[in-house]
Image (cartoon, rainbow, N blue to C red; front, side):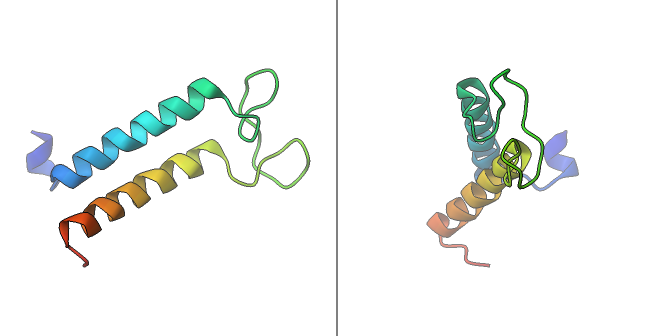
Length: 78
């Protein structure tokens, strides 16, 4: 049903899986760059207790980059 609503090809499905796996791995490891000592997300900002690259932005960037890389691998440059 979703395939009829959206044009989801193999590259898109694989990119979604990569994005979800990367997001899960980052969330489970809780690096101090994205998380406070208490395990909460850091706020977006430039202060010492904030992060310039929040979790959602990095996961989105991973998704776009993996999809674009998969398209390039297939030879579809446009």
